[in-house]
Image 1: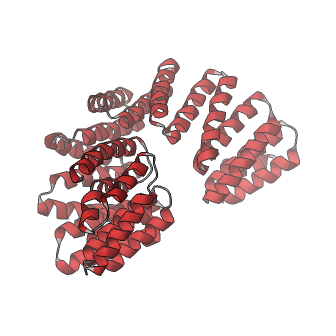
Image 2 (image 1 turned 180 degrees about the vertical axis):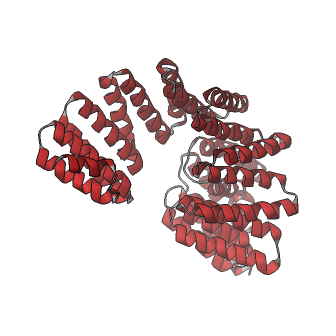
Image 3 (image 1 turned 90 degrees about the vertical axis):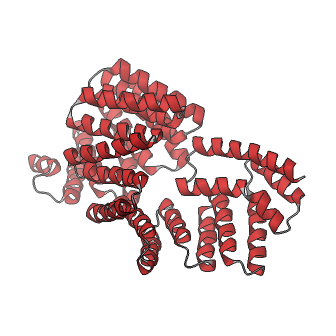
Length: 449
């Protein structure tokens, strides 16, 4: 019976890995834990005296996307570990239960990971994973607290590996929060310890992270240097997926610097590597990058072809976020060609997906794009409605600068339609949000006097 169960588990594991590779249901750490939860279930169940039939039922349910039985088994396994006084094993069971739970209930999943650090409070990996989960759901304050706890554990033990991991995770958290100087400081600290340890893979990651920091700061020469170092290490180590990512990052730098030939060469190299690896997700990203490059240079036919290729891959993978991005990009191509009906159709498709996903940023982009289409057509009431929807979503997101831009657009729409009182009101709102006397909206308000 055990041999049969193991064969079933191996087959299921392969299917789970394919599913996770094709979907962005969780971050990389959670995906690894999901795989471990499936892979280790038969062995852990046997050790805890769980019936083979219960494992078989759990695996059958997993095939159909139902994690409930497997979660319950990991709960029972964890309880058995507690009863045996094996707190570290109980904590590991809680994390595996939490990873499966995260696929459908992030709040409950966090509870399992919090339980894990209660059971095994001196385990830095447990605190790191809890921090990842907090960051995944946007709770950056708790993420920072968890990572700081890891750093304290590492420093108390003079454990360079733990210190480096904590510093890198804090760097990613600060970058997400927009605290770029602190992020750079943490990435430099991570790099220094990884150099001491001679961990070249981790050094490559640190160089890539530093490249991202310099790119955000628009220090493009430094960004290029960091990405080149990451590429050098990744090529030496044979990390081909990372090599593709490095090429993509370099392509972004060259595109921003206006060196479009070099940008295209980098994107093409990234695509070549992803194709060789059969990495569909990477191929979709590379095609999108090439489409955006061609759109920038006015090669609209080539841009459309690349976006459609990217869209086709995203549809095959079932990645609705990627589909929405490509629909929006196709809308931009059609808009630049003056094909406004087709542009509207694409923006509407992007909006439909973003609304279904609850993706407010995606919704904002679609509202703005549709507002521009209607404004160009002279359909001012519809344009006004789109900009007002955009403002409502931006307010939820706390994007005050974006709200100012939309109010400014509303002012121009109302001016064009002869509603000068409303135009003045919208421009004044834009001016107050910009809070800059030389802003375009302030000049527009002055011109109305």
